[in-house]
Image 1 (cartoon, rainbow, N blue to C red):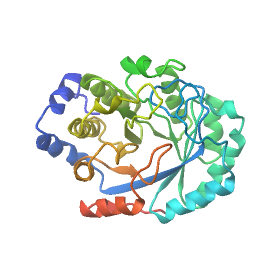
Image 2 (image 1 turned 30 degrees about the horizontal axis):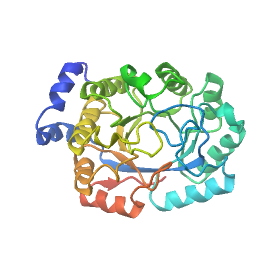
Image 3 (image 1 turned 90 degrees about the vertical axis):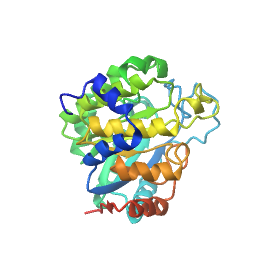
Image 4 (image 1 turned 60 degrees about the horizontal axis):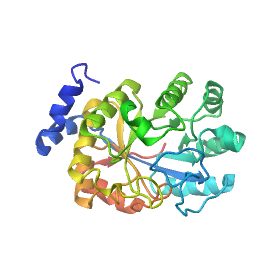
Length: 309
């Protein structure tokens, strides 16, 4: 991040007319646009109390839960994602840590299978210790995904069963192991504009290769089920732009909520002026655009789509 971009300067940029803000952010976008995809390899029955999450056992959300899927199911989903233009394919599992389900060995096999298909493997499997990070590296994991979710000052309003520092430590272990880091946030959870600026600065300190930005899709049964009015589309665009300016070398990736919380017009504006990448297809417990729809948008804004090796 530019040393001169402190909280006051970023807040000043955030409040510029949107066209002026985009003129700055688009200077930093990458030449090629990247797709990634995921599989919810284990869904639900999570012990944590994250107030946004449909997968927590503490809330009655009536989602369909399942244990870890088979290696063949992961392979099939990965092959389909590659056909749809994805570069990275992520295994995502519910739970605080991979230890809780005692299936870490199976996850290592899945990583090797994804790599064998010519995709870049990614995993989002919870809070890690140093040993697990090294085992993932040895299995050939390309990238680990672990969000901070929000800024340090707001974390206790989101979750009480693990700390912000637990998440920071995981990011540290991943980078020390030599694995790429994907680390982002969820916006629209009641945070202030100033706290969104704090997120941008804290992510700049972490310096991940990829920053996925999720927009809260309120799920019935969670404490945040009525949080539809906590952020509007203009502030979503402003947040994305400031994240890009604060993190010019990181890929800003639009993730969950892009269909539910952004109009197609504003998503296209973001792709043109801010974004470097997107998660395509469906998410964990919500749906998204089809890969074909997202490809059309990339073409519409004259961006080149990155392809697999």
